Length: 235
Image (cartoon, rainbow, N blue to C red):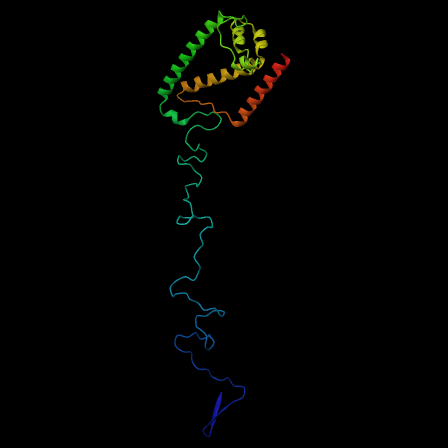
């Protein structure tokens, strides 16, 4: 506060000095010389009418030019058919499962299966009829020989199969076991299962393709090798 005496202005001690009114457009609380839009010493470049929040960043694994967000009803690992576990080619799964693509024409599959079964039955019947009257235990018979046995003189894992089939036709199970025990115990049931499964699936209008896994093939080859060594050592 000030007083005027004789043309002179004197400040009264302890009184507040009046301040000048703020300039038009300036912040009443901004210090002199500072930008009215500055906050904490950092100037603001926000355009009036827009938000000052930073835009959300895209996920770090988004491909350039593609949307980083998958559709809510789609899976990035789903196959075109809709199943995330379908085979890459849309065909048969591992383990010998029926091929779903063949179900579109079940009549054709049934016809093919019946024709194949009739042909196999005819060939098997003719072979059994010939073998019934041809004893492989006797020398000089017109029967195929094992190439491995002819070249090396050793028994392969399936040697004796013809003699085993002859003994089975005549009902001599003990002689068939002596001819080739592993082939009788493992080979005959496996062949019957695969043939029956092919016929069963085919009559239902589906194809069945045997695709054993690598581990299964390795085990089968190891068993065959062991059996070949054992039967040649023991005689």
